[in-house]
Structures are given as structure tokens and as C-alpha cells.
Length: 593
Image 1 (cartoon, one colour):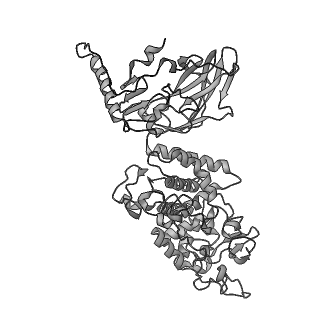
Image 2 (cartoon, rainbow, N blue to C red; image 1 turned 120 degrees about the horizontal axis):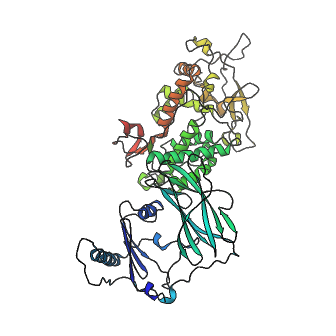
Image 3 (cartoon, rainbow, N blue to C red; image 1 turned 60 degrees about the vertical axis):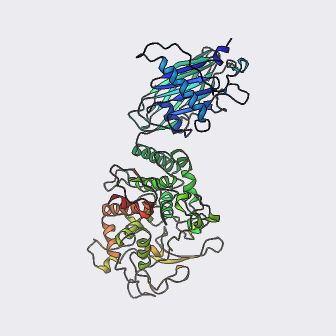
């Protein structure tokens, strides 16, 4: 019978890993390079180089892990049963001493006192038998969906299947660069009854990023089954460094943006979302009860799958992923192959989230509890700021100078305005191409033929007229907005304040009653609004020099996205770097000093 299997201690050696199993108990002593330890850590089961496991259920029957039953080796009992761990370690060491090739043979028995009694012979599970009508049945595989692996060595894909006359399991692999192999047969490495495990070696050392694989299970009777059945791939991430991991997350965000087009411009929504999150510090939280945040539920939901897979690995947090999405939204909206394109690189990770207990932000959240959609109450800028108020807001909030503020406003080149969110009726956006990050925003506000044109020529841009938007049928405020052309492109007062001085002119609901955008000829019911001397010349520079604007916008945008609570004592040599411990509300740029 099989009683000897249940009532003896068995010792195992694999590379530099060592283990002993006595009845229901298994103890492992793993090396620093152990794939077992790496798998446990990546799946967040346990960490360290020692493990103690109970392989039996309450009836002292061995647990057989399958698709519905977790492996007992996911729960490490090392700290809860220290005496047993000590005993099992001594038992393992005894075996290693006895089998040491450098000493004379030792003839004594290794015994343990603490290990759980062995299961009875009747509890040894029966051999698995196929019962799927002759069709091969998928049981399990590894890596599992969304596993995070390190690329230090090639990766074994492994599949366990059930069939009474299995012939082979074939693997098809998709690499991060998008190339896909044909189906190739794996090696059969284990058989128990009708259950068999098949391995396939993949070189994951040359590419980091998201891999995928599919299975084709075939038996001797001509039956076959593909898994996953819907034609998709089981996907896993391979990365060795912060840079590789961030790049994989960024590629995932880019694919989400692309998949949403043309119906939804997620790139623009990610840019807006990043700004709203970083007011008060980028912390992966916004307060959706604040009407100024209306519409942000869309980018938050779109990023949930990325947060689920990538947060809590390599120091990445939800706040980092929201910032990364904003950077990719801007970067990916640049014209394809544009000569002025910038990288919009991610320099820092490790931003704490608002629900981090170390931040002490709970008092600013609803019922003293912060979540990603009920973050601290932060004051967003009014859409009706004059020039001085606009510059003051961005200076206070992000440390911007005048140039940074004028540059950041160019983000309005992306996206549209929805009445149900903001009250503004801007379905065609601020400029013509709402999907392209370029300097058309300034071209719509500034006239002249060159940056050196006199002020009166710079003020002679396309005309804008105020239009009243009645939102009484909605829940949003009534608005005055600036419109031009038959396409009804839109500007708000804070946009106009870059080129016109509206100080003292902005009334209730944003109406400007004392001046108009420009006055041509003698038929002018109102005088032209005076120019904004602090900012008009900067806006003119950007109108005539797209490369200059993109460079300044990237700088200001990254400064905004690096605002938060961080330790300011470190340095970053090879970005992206992990920020230090929480210290004070500071801009991460301080870490580069």
C-alpha cells in the first residue's frame, strides 16, 4: 500500500533549495535566488527564505490544489508555530549533516518531536480520473493571470490538464513587442492517473513587459481543447527594474487609451484627472462629491485594471499610476513623429495615497476615512479668474512662475467641455483638433505675424464673443463662455486672462460686461478689454514656437505631477526612483538638488 508515503519524512533538494516533509508538515529552506521564494513574494503570499506549511485539511487528508482550491503552500506558518519550525529545521539539518559528502558516513536516526502526526493511509487521495466525456480538460497553469515575474532567467510555462489518453499540450506565446509564436509542444514533466503537467521554456531575458500564452490540449483520440476558449491570452508581466516595470504599466495605459478611441478621448481625461488629483498633492484620491470633479469617474474606472495589477509592486502606488496615466495622456497625444515631441518621462514612484495612515489626512475626508473617490476636500481653481488671480493660484499651489502658468494652460488644447460636468457647452473643445497636443490653443488667443509684433497686432486675434449658457434644466451652474466661429470653439474667462486683463470686469456667472475681446472700427458697443501685460508676450512666444511651448509645458506638467508629501533628502541618479519616506508637503523636484 501507500502507507510508507504517509508515515515517513521525505527530504528534497532542488538546486540550492532544501525541504523536508513529515506527514502533514512541510518545511522549506530556500536560497537567495530561489524561484519558489520569488513566486511567493510576487504573489504576496509570504516573504523570506523559510516556510512551514500544513499540507492537510481538518480531517488530516492531503489537500489537492486545483482551480477552486488554493495550494496550502500559500500560507506560511513560520511565525504562528515557531517550535514546529525549529524542530523541522533541525530535522532538515540532521539530514544535510548525514549526507555531507565531505564527512564520514553518520549512522544515526534523524527524528522530530513537534511535527503533526502523519495522515492515515485512507486519507491518501485517489489518483485523479478524467470524467469530461473524453474531451481534454484544462485544470491550472502558471504563470497565472497578471503574475509579476522577474526576468533573471528564462521562464517555464506550466499547464496541468486532465485526460485519459493525453498526447501533448502545445503552447503559443505572445511577446511584449507584439510578436506571436505558433503552437509548440511542451514537455510532459509529471503524471498522476489521468492528470499530467507539461512545461514549456520561454526566453524572457531579452524583453521586459507583458507576455501572454495560450494552450492547445490534444489527446490520442483526436480530441482537442484550446484555453482560454475566447481566444485571449493568459498574461503576465516580466520586469527586473523600476524602469522596466513602469514601462510595462505605461504600455498598458497606452493600450487602454487606444482601445477607447474614437468614442472616448481618455488621453485628455487622464490629463485632467492628473491635475485634479495633484491639487493639494498627488495622492491617488479625488473627492467625487465636489462638483468640480464631475466626470472623473470615467478615468478612475478606466485605470482600475492597471491599479489592480501594478500597484504594490516595485514601489508603485495608485497615485503613481494616476500620474503615469496623465503623462502618457499628454505624451501619446503629440503628433506622430512630430519633430517637437517630448518624452514626458516618469521620474519618481512611491507617492503615498490619501488612505495611507502616515499622511494623517483622514480629518479632511468624509467621516474621517479617505478613499480614491472620497479624498480630502481640495479647492480647485475658479473658471473665472483674472490674470493676477490665475498666476497667484498656480504659484501658491505648485510653485509656478508666470511662464509655467501660461504653459500649463495649453493643456486645454486637449479634450472638450461637457455641460453635465462643468456647465460649459464646449463639445468641439477649445481648438479644432481635440486629440492633438500642440500650440493651437495660443494661436486662437494671439494675433500678429511674429513674436515681435506690436501689442495691438498681438491683440488682433480671431474674435471671441460671450454667450450665455442656461443650465437650469441641469444640476450645473449657469455660465458665460467665450465662443468663436461656426464650430463654436470655447474659452473660459481663465483662458482669456492669459491675453486680456479682466480685473474688475468679471461678474455673476462669469459675465464680462465692461469690455469685449476686441473692437474693430467705430461700431463697438463696448471698448476692447486691455491686454494682460504679464502673460500676453509669453502666450505669443508659444503661438509662434511649438517646440518651445512643448518643452515648457512638459516641465510645468511634471512639476505639477511631482507635488506631494515626500522625504526631500534623497537624490535620483537613474529614474524612475522610489521616493523616500513621507516627510512634508514638498515638490519632488527638491530631491534632485
